[in-house]
Structures are given as structure tokens and as C-alpha cells.
Image 1 (cartoon, rainbow over the protein chains, first blue to last red):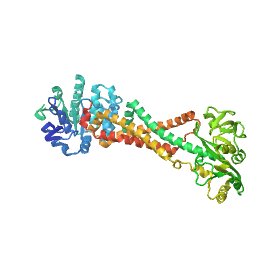
Image 2: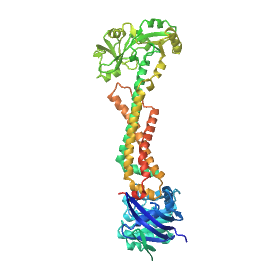
Image 3: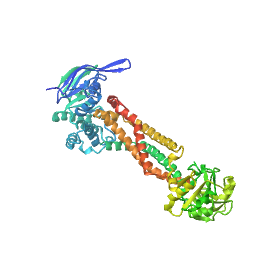
Image 4: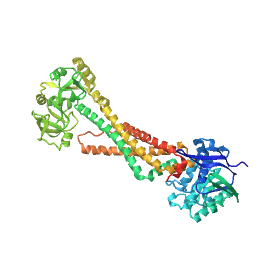
Length: 226
Length: 368
């Protein structure tokens, strides 16, 4: 089976004046459809940069990033944006919900940007699965941290992305909420076959995935399957 | 969705939204009122001249349409020749002088008998007609706006003291009227007049009377009153079009700058939100659409408020300056002011929109 995501000698170098900082140094990974992969590593090892590059938010300096057969590294900004719109869902540590919109509109905003029109069945399925169907009329300020993150996950899923990229999804949650969110991600992976890549520094969170990639100094140094 | 998002964004910062709308409203009010006041001054002046009831006006050759600039070069004996024309029923001479002491007002010197034949006579609120050399008639608007001038009061006009003989209804010529002979005396313009008003025997004989008069006085400026009134446009007044253009530029600048500042601040404040939208796959055009739509909404609401403020301002101006005619608020200029407000606002939002659409998503998401 073709991997849903593949990187080949991936480099990302940040230039600040005359200084060059290599955040990724020749990363080679493959993620199969339906996998739940955790990426772990110390601060500054390049985890977030990896997520941004494979999600098309940042452009690789060198190498290839093949997402569902499309080389992100060869694309311009508007092409990466279009690909991201249809194939990638993001979940952030700080939830990043729009504060002026209620949960319903935060989720359907993603559908609106997607451009395929409003799908009420998908919305019902996703919100029921995540247990937030009764909280849709509330704004983020009226939701708990766990609820906000579930709304964010619903927003990431509503467009049926090929891959969900989660950047420390439990970083701002208490233990109970963290377990709930991680459990839901595992459920999405098992029941819907959703491919998930999750960054975490927490080994217990990382254990929710099928495989853990360990990063250090911009390189993947180990890959452990459960 | 975008409509809902924009409305929520606008409501999220009510004070900033309100201030922005007020600024746009002031811009709209400025345009409408400046145009309205200048138009009404022109129209009022023309209407009061036309209110003398004449069908045709005779002025000296190459004279200005603004009677106060013409002087008094015509011999009053011309009226005898005019009275002999076939279609002429009555002729009255008028001497026009501008009073610039204490205020700027036109003073007409009239012959009461013939002026009454042409105009149908004054409607008196109090007092009597002109009889003595130092008598003066004032209209009700002048009386009200000058500390309620009363019959019997003394007025200092054209360097002379006059006794208020009567207060008349406005609309028939100048606000101040004295005897022709008295004004000729005081101005050293013996037997002179600024213009002649002609009343035809029938209104449908105006053109015939016009033709007769032109044949009698070929080098003089002979104008039907209807045409005279229509001459009073902003383009006919030197500098007025330029004044209006300057005021409009100032108004647009206000709107442009306020919207620029408001949307620039908004874009900076919403940096992370822009990052979120980009992470969801929103294109530059999508983001630009949100900013510009929000701007258009603010401008449109500001325009609506500005129209309301214009009507309120009109009332306030009338209360504060009763001698000024009511500002003319026309549909044309109301629409133009709206277009100016929206275009100025969108122009002001262009740079903030460009900034928003070009924000790096990673940096934007990391923004605190």
C-alpha cells in the first residue's frame, strides 16, 4: 500500500540574518493510511517544524514531502493552501478556535473554506462521535478546555482529511481531559481509519499511537511500533 | 458563513466599531451638508430674485448674474421705453447695493408703486410700506435672525441709519428694501438702476416680451426669470466647485484614515485568527474577502448613520443660523456621499488586507 505521507531527505533551514539554523536535517519517514503515529523528542528537536512542513504550512528547504502523492516541497503557497484545505486537518495545543464564533460555526467554517458545501450528516456524525452535539451553540469562552479541543478535532475532521496533524493536543488540558481527547483520537483511528500524526513530549500520550518516532536535533533517530 | 463571521467580528469590539462608524458618518454628513448649504444659498438667492414676480429681467451689458456685483449703470428712464412695448404690463427699476457692515446683505432700492405692480405687493406681518427716505423694510427671516428686529427700531445699513417701517414675508427679493430715490441719493447714483423687472400682460407672452426687449436694447442682458434661476449652479460661481472638491477630499481622507487605522489594528489583533484560517486552507482571497466585507459593512452602517446625522444637522443649523436657508439634501448627493464613503473606506482597508493575506501561517499561529 502506498504511504499517505512520505518524506525524502527532508531539510528545513531557518535563516536569521547571516545565521542558518537547520531545524530538520534529512528526515526520511513513511506513514501508511490508517496509522496513528506519535512524534516525540526534546524541545527544539524539530517536531513542530516537521508538522508544519508535512502539513504544508511551511515550505521545505530541500527534499520531498509527498502527501497523498503530491509533492508539497515543489508547490507554491497557493497550491499548498489548496492541498491543505482538502487533505489536512490540524489540531493545536491552544485549540485555536475563533473566539467570536460559537462551536457550530467554528466547525462549519472549515466546511465553508473547503468549498464543498454544508454537509449536515457529516457534522452530526462527527459531533456525536466527539460528544459535543449539545454544546454547539456555545462560544469557546463558554466551553471547558476538553470541550474546546473536541470542537477543534471536529473542525479538523469535518472536511474528511486524508491526515490529521495534532500538535501537542493535550498540552493545555488536565489529566482527565487529556485521557478523553487521546481516547477519542484513538477511537477515530480505529473506527474511521483516520490517519493521525501527533506531536507530544508525554510518553503516556505517545503510547496511544501505533508507532512512535523519536526525534533529536532535526533527525528521526528511532521508530518503535506497539 | 462570511456574513455571520463579519457580523460577529463587528460586534466583538463594539466601541471600535462605533467610533469607526461615527467617523464614516461624519464624513458623509460633511459632504451632504457642505453640498446642501452651498446649493441652498445659491437656490435661495435665485428664488428670492425670482420671487419679485417678474417674467423678464433686464441687466446692463456683460453684467454678472450676481446682482450685487453689477453696480448701477442703467438710466431709470429706460423703464419708460420698456413700458411702451406691446406685451409689457409693468416695469419696475431696482438698485442693488451690498451692505458689508456687521453682516453681508443685499439691499434693494425700489419704487413701491411699480414694484407692487410687478410683484403683487408685500405681505406685511407688521408696520407699513416705504414712505420716507429713511424707511426700511425687513423680511421676517432677517428680523428673527437679528435679535427680533421690530417696527420702529433703527438699523444701521450702508453707513446710514434707517427706521424699520415694516416687517414683510420673505421671498420677494432682498431681505432689506429701501426707497429707490433714497438709495440713489445715499450711493451717489442719481437716476440710476441696477436692473429692471418686467411683468408681461400674460405669462405665455414672456418670449414675445423677451424678443421685443432684446430688439429695443440689443446690447443689454435680457433674461427670462426661469432661465435666470437655472443659471445658479455651483459651476457658475467662481471657486465654489473647487471649494466643494476640497471639502470632499477632506471628507474622503477622514474616512480613509479612520478605516486604515481601524482595520490595521484589527488585522494585528487577529493575527492568530488569520493563522488559524490559513491552517484550515483559507486562500489569500478568502481572507481578503473577510476584511473588505467587514470594511464595507462598517462603511455602509456609517453611511446610514451619516444620512440621519445630516438631517439632524440640518435642523441644528437652522436653529443656530435662522437667516441661512435650509440645507438642500438631495438624493443624488446622498448616494454620492455613500459611494465616496464606501470607496474611501475600501481604499483605506487595502493595505491592512494585503498584510493579512500575506501573513505567514506559522508565525501567525505563534503570535501572542
